Length: 130
Image (cartoon, rainbow, N blue to C red; front, side, top):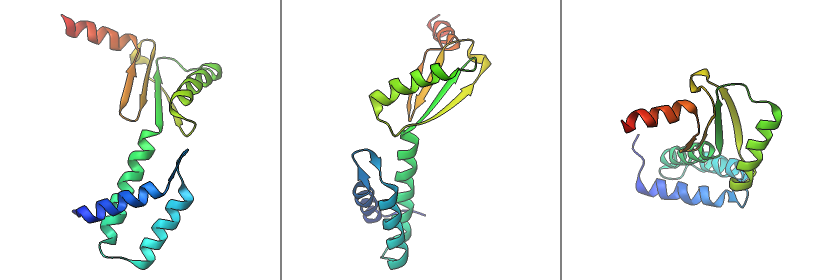
């Protein structure tokens, strides 16, 4: 379904109204979605689709995936989480993955940003340089 420019702009406005200084306010968003669903304004399906997309992007932007070659203990996880929360705020969610193919180091993905400090990543960059 193609979403009109008006529906997209309306969804952006609603999304901005549902945000607070600490991030997305789920209670405000829930009230807004219920009101749209009950009143059914013109183009409400497009508005809901655009709003769903904005919420999905916001959740992805606040989700951190930490990949390592070995399992990280609690102190290492807390240190990583503390450093990222200090820089990006407290509303981050964390997922830790073990990938033995990395050989060592960490790869951290926060939204669309990736920090690759793995041995495999360094070897790949070295191979590309030749």
